[in-house]
Image (cartoon, rainbow, N blue to C red):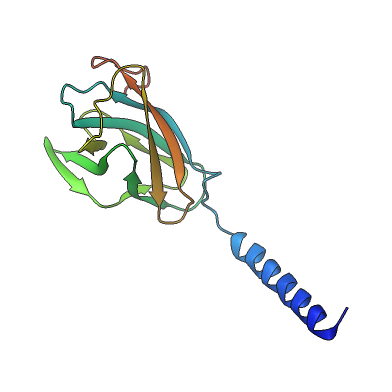
Length: 152
């Protein structure tokens, strides 16, 4: 092998090692964050819906949900405080804790939907975080009166 080929191989090995080192040591990752209880009640409107789910973070570092995207429409995050709904750009996912989206509290708002979600269908969303990799979630559309056993 020529000196140039050896040098190139050595450089690639070094870059690969640095990439691996850079990936380790992060406490929060998509492997750590889990999503449960995701659903969308069948909406009355053809272009707007709400979504609910729970994000669990077993890690020792807080993360933040920074956005939610979907090919099916625009999604914003909302908090409800004192009966007032307010759009927010970030929500904390506490270390050793949960971020809960439930009726009357934090929730996702789907707007400008390409089709009306019907019971039995699913809407795929991608959750984006400040620290962790994105998480893809399939949200089943439930009946308009669906109440989960988990209370959200």
